Image (tube, rainbow, N blue to C red; front, side, top):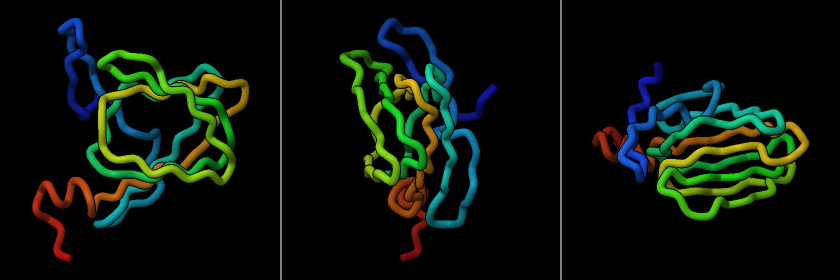
Length: 123
C-alpha cells in the first residue's frame, strides 16, 4: 500500500493516491527529481502534487491527464526536450495515450512547496 494518502472521488469513494513518479533519481533539501516511464496505454496512478514542478520530456508521447473531480481530459503532446512548469493542483492520473514510450524527469521544487508549508525554508 502507498503512503501518499487518499482522496475522495465525486461519488464519495476513497481513492488511494500514488507517487508523482516511479523512482526518485535525485533529491536534496530544495528539489526532488522523479523518473516517469510509460509504455503506450500505461498509467501513472492517481496522485497529487504538493510542490510546483517542471516536467522535462526525454522521449515524446501523447498523454492524457484525467482529473479525479471529473471533466474533460486534457490531451497533451510532450515533445523531446520540451519543458513545462505546473503549479500544485488537482488530484489527477496520467495515461500514455499515444503509440510511443513516454519518458520524462519531473523536478519537484520543494523549496516552493512542502518546505514552505513545513516552515523549513531557511532562505
